[in-house]
Amino acid sequence: MADKQGTIKLDSYNLHVNDIVVNVDIFLERNAFVPSYNISILNISKITDIILHKIREEFVSKINIGDIKITDTGDPNVIKEKFTKEIFVLIKKYFPDIDKKTSNLLINYLIQENIGLGNVEILLRDSNLEDIVINNAHDPVWVYHRKHGWLKTNVRVLTESKIRHYSTMIGRDVGKEITLLKPLMDASLSTGDRVNATLSPISTMGNTISIRKFAEKPWTITDFIKGKTISYYGAALIWLAVQNELSILITGGTGSGKTSMLNVVSNFFPPNQRIISIEDTRELTLPDSLHWVPLETRLPNPEGKGEVTMLDLLVNSLRMRPDRIIVGEIRRKREAEVLFEAMHTGHSVYATLHANNARETIVRMTNPPIEIPKLMLPALSLIVVQHRDRRIGVRRTLQIAEVLPNGDPNVLLQLDAQKDQLNQINESKVLMDTINLYTGLTIEEIKEDIDEKINILKWLVSNNITNIHQMGLIFAKYYIKTLKH
Image (cartoon, rainbow, N blue to C red):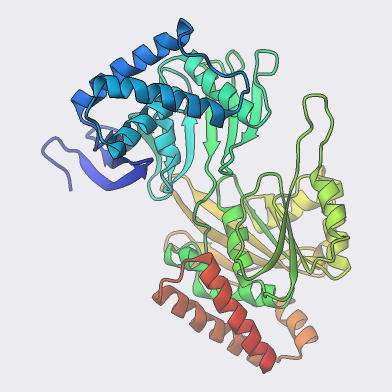
């Protein structure tokens, strides 16, 4: 509902960041084209904030004139401990009767401002955000919200030198550097968040930082069904394929939810099989009940040594007796060759690839730089295509296709964008026969199995089971029950 000024309130909630209570308001102003994301700190008054600003200035001046000496260890924790002691002295000077709880609150706030990322730290704590981007010192910080898409915030980094300082600080903590000679940097925070930074003049309007947040709460099949990302039948079909150890490739454009779908697919893994996952940056979270070994690539050090590539890990994983292999993304020919070799030797493989639909997936797989012979593709059973409608900010499963013996795709389910429904458009020519071959189940029995799976999925949704570890236990019990039968 719009207020008298024509502003429409879209959302409002609170965040708790190191004892600091932050209100988030999301609204669309009259004549604005993009909604706003505004933060305000609730438990620090304006007068207190003015005094804190004075403390901050005094603290910085003491560092500048050498009264406060920063340790040369470079250890952020040692520096933080030193700063905490010095800030406490200043706070007691201006607030002599302050209690411990309030003192800790103000210390955390000042530490965040001085050796953290300022108010960007608050954005990092919002689990509703997927991306945080700083474009330059003139523009506000932008965020990508799970529910509302791209939003302008009231957070600003006021100088280009401050943006560069943030980039340097992030790089230093993970052994990376960003300089005028090396103006591009990829890094990962200790939280798992991925960071890309660029320096001017490479980014012509100013220094930039792009942060892709690690999902604190992994996506589950319940989340996908409740959010209309996928239908019950589509989810049951994928579950059927996973249960029968068939390989699946998840494709889509950037930000379409490929990795999220990969995490959802892992909900269906049985607990009695060994799973090896290989990623450039750790994004997957699998249930505790699974026998899972996550592996991560490593970039070379500044001397160019110590690199561990996706191919290295793929080849090594085959010596680890895996039942199932998960690969973050296929990019090169040799990686794809090893994966398809793994499929042909009896391993179930789950991976992602950039392609916008099932037919384009086949084209990408059979042409440079991947260039897999088309006759090898039938080792892959399903292609699941994810799509993101950037206009309205929603993600949907666009297609689920099987791969025919000649390597062509047969689209089984396709999204009707007008009705927002995932509909069956073709009968299976391969999938059902493959399951029949290895299980002996008739087509009717397979359909009954799908119906049973749909009923279980409906129960998960009606009971709002969204905890991935709880879900893992439920599927483990299901598999134990099926083994007994």
